[in-house]
Image (cartoon, rainbow, N blue to C red; front, top):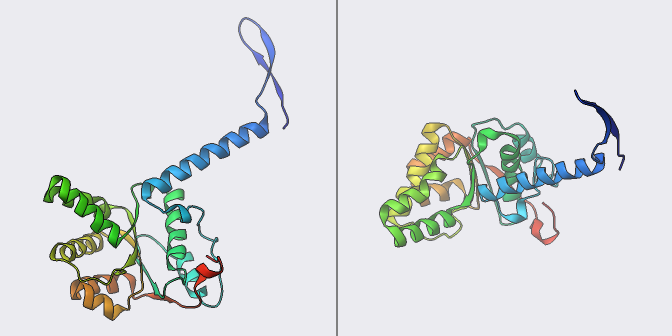
Amino acid sequence: GTIEYSWVTSEAFSYWTRERCKACAQKQREKEQQVRKERKLKAAGVPLEFWEHAIGSNTEDDHNTHVATALSQWAAPGWVLLSGEVGTGKSSWLTSLFNSCILWDSHYDGARWTTESKIFEGADIAHSQDGYTARQAFVRPYISAPLLLLDDVGASRRALTEWQGSAMRNLFDERYSQGLATFITTNLTMEAIRLRYGDHIFSRIRSATGGPYVLSGPDRRGNGSR
């Protein structure tokens, strides 16, 4: 790279000094930016496979143009619900928007990317170690996060326990009432959501999202597409 010299004048004397190589300085800045990016993504819980996702990185085609348009027009604190079969790109599309939000806007510091099963698993571990209040404390950051991506809602298809049902009602109810941006992906239909979570949660999700954007098409994992 180009190394430049500059003339420095002080009260005692003046001299030429060599500035840092511009290319080296640029590389250092890029390295620092990458470190900050990875730190934010890791803190939010974004899986490593999605770290390079951002708005514009997904493969657009006839199956998902409506989703690309909707997400490009998203405005906070809107909710988004993507539904569809396994492998149609639901997580990729919403994570691209999620990543762009947390990397470009400090308002979303404290955002969380998770799955329903991870919330339940983490809460159970906390409960076994420190009791009921620890379980509640574990869930709190997901309830109050300025942006939450809840991936694969209802994936286990197992009936919810009394505590799990209560926790999900509380999560959705508080985020709805506080106007906190929430992204959801699921393989369930709206009717299946109503049957699994009850009318209360169903009503909140339907009202906040206006209904799902449905993704169809082939399994993109098979051909490496996003």
